[in-house]
Image (cartoon, rainbow, N blue to C red; front, side, top):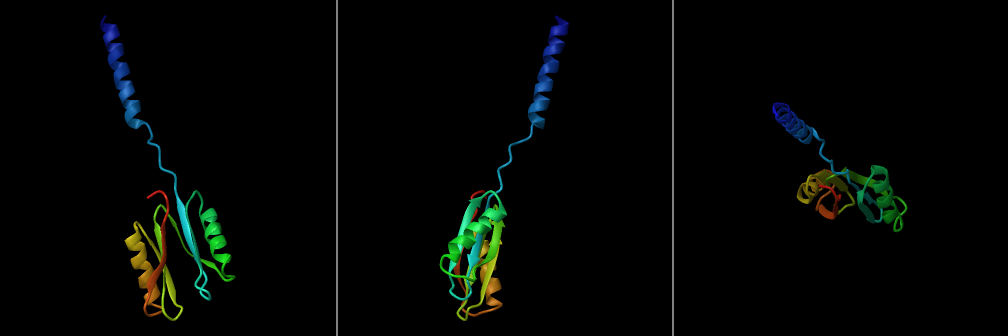
Length: 128
């Protein structure tokens, strides 16, 4: 009887140890990107892609349908990105943990190159 009780207690402790030590399922990374054409001011964007390359490729494809000189302005992972454009063609991009931070960063960078900067595009990746 004592052996059964000891075995039960041992099994309970063992189960508890495995439950506490069990790895938690991590959320998959989610990538996004914004592409921009300085000459036409066209943009393209993507979100919720499993790789950076796929996110950038999609953003470029969305932009290049309207312009030839599109380039990736910003990419981000599990975050938000923004593009700000100024009056004289200057632009800036930024990322942050939320939309507001990304927009503030983009406007700050844009203001270093242009006046009258305003957010032209923002997007957040799916997993934040």
